[in-house]
Image 1 (cartoon, rainbow, N blue to C red):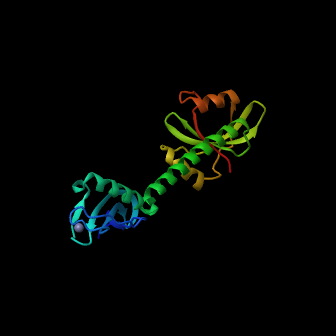
Image 2 (spheres, rainbow, N blue to C red):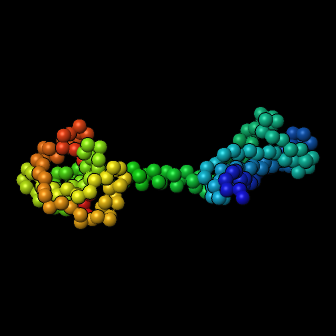
Image 3 (cartoon, rainbow, N blue to C red):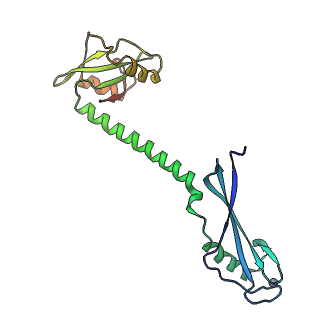
Length: 207
Ligand SMILES: [Zn+2]
């Protein structure tokens, strides 16, 4: 089964103008035809590849490729080529890739905006993802004071950052009753530097 490769579509110039044949000198017997190729995966167009055309005389049947045409004919060929437009669907894959890219950028941007907001105005139950001594865990805000935050650390520690989502999902309420305090200055240093003695804040989430 062919799952990717190139496919071709015949393009019809918008101006179906015809030209005089330079070989048999018949008036208006020459037309141009174009083939546009595109790369596909599972028959879904991803991006355009080549576009090639020929001229054809309906009288003497002479067929010419672009490099065989006279300068005058090359000009006609260029005009016909410009009016034989590829369908926009040949760019479908590029469009989707662009869209995914925008969504990721938007996500990263809003995340960072939100974290700045959560950092400036902490709330009870905000969850901080923390790295400390090469391990990862969660701190949950249990009390907010004017210049201090009081956290309940999670009872479990993960060896990998990716495992934190599992802790949040499976052991949602498994937080210690013993609390730890950080001043807001300490929290800021934990957000900015990985060398903070108190650990590093990777992200802040609010439900
Ligand atoms: Zn001809």
